Image (cartoon, rainbow, N blue to C red; front, top):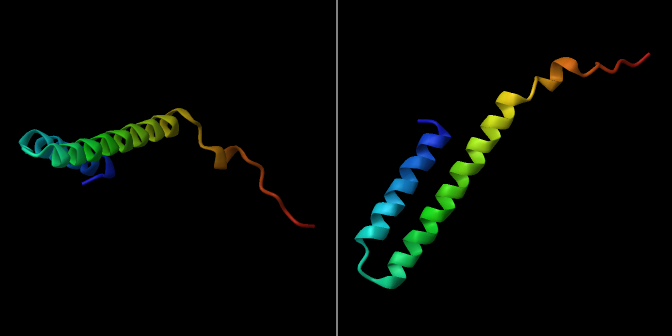
Length: 67
């Protein structure tokens, strides 16, 4: 299971717990947890997108040698 899949599973669990909650305090707790998981998902997706678009920097950087 990748990190992104794990985050999606946790977000789904938090959303289900939010909808199943009867107490407003518990519902607010699960809603905040769901929001955190969604932000983590967005961050991972953004990082993967940047990595896919950016060329490999290591191959273009010159190797410093000592003389």
